[in-house]
Length: 159
Image (tube, rainbow, N blue to C red; front, side):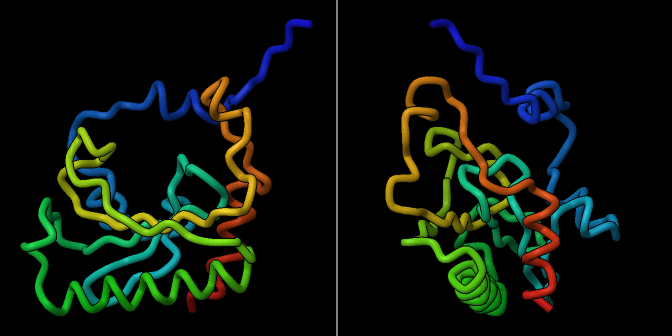
């Protein structure tokens, strides 16, 4: 039996212009946080949802300043990034009930960084058995909740 699996939301990313600056810096200049999936703006860092997530609830925490290296962050930025990450973890645990979470940085293109020159931490909820045949065989992920629906559920919890 021959079946086709469609992932139409990926075409937006595939066809998007990936040149011309940092998308994090661009979205920070705008004030439409919902369209940009920004969940919380702190003093020096912010929390946003990943538009092309590995799993549902995949968040990122980044400083406002365009920095490539962790060592360039101020002590205040490091503290706030950590505090916002802790807040995000607790919200995700309460709202999505994951079995675990992956937190980390992709430093450099070889490490998987799609955005290699604006430091950001990933927070990825994980569930037992969440890696199945879909990503292994077809590079397709199954998301259990629509992105904007998930934004609307998570955003009030950050305020």
